[in-house]
Length: 492
Image (cartoon, rainbow, N blue to C red):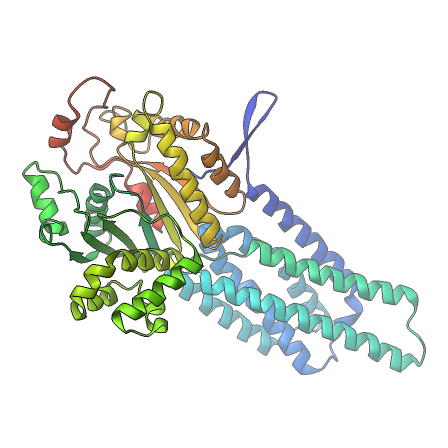
């Protein structure tokens, strides 16, 4: 489910999120477009210079065509609708006034269409959004200059001062253009949707979730895996194939040693749309201080250790193959610097990822009232909130609660049922008692944030505090995923 800010009116829960505000933006944009075109109707005449008509026809057509790409990406629908609501009236006025130049219109439609479908088939809309924001600025500057030139031309032709009402109208038109630009830039967002990074502390169920998602990628997405493991004792047992074989024998994956490092990347396609999901499993302390200054110092330290250029380290440290090359060429230095390599790799992965998945250990839910679960969750959500603030709103985030089987008996609950959604809402209400989680909810007004509850084995019985044998339960573990497909949907 998508997280949104909650409020209460007359005792009823209501949902208030940025979508309502964006719809208002769309309506305001459409109204301002009509006002602007009506007030400036005398400027759109057929005998205007051809290059002016060509440029504006190209820009308007490009916006309309690119809007298709924005609408295809679910987090950018409002931006696409806004583009259409503003520029379809321009297209109509240009056409009926003879201002529209067919050559410019066709070029704009082709160029915008190419960018839209390229973004769709690459599952990456960040470049489309960046390109559109630049075009919006170009439209603002070019149209403003055109209005200025038209005003001075009118003054020179009449050999008299421009009437005060004309000056007021001109200023008002410029203000409307500025408002266009501001609203459009606020509503146009694009996400590098194919690149998903899974982040969570040790013990959060990351390894078993990796195995469940591996099954989804292989069976349904024609996927493949890449892995890189550095370990003195667990090098073989940390490989996905060997972990799956161990599960077949009823054995859980081995815990990482402090010096163990395992990087995994799953790649697949849904139709034409690619997606890749990255995991990192490190036995040492989990990184908490994500800061650009600390990152730059870390890169400088790695430069001193490996003798590699800082520019190359900065550009490639996210690449698993590059990390593998560092380890192969300098095994001793790598062993000494592994913690810094991990920090730099995670930081750069968070920078470049279009979607970030935060894992929450289901054990915290079980211990929420009677143990230290609430305390641990308060710290964890504080860290996740800091990451969201640090790495910006040009991303989509998901909070994934693992081990839901320890909280509820899932054996009779279908994944897409109302009962399954009720479990999510129940856990959401528990989280909402925590101020650091409320901070994340507040961020959802501007950033798409989702929450999912999953399990890798829906046949397990819930763990009751003080009863049963948790170790015996774990020994019966199988890969029988429950709502893991929701993570796949989030990824696309």
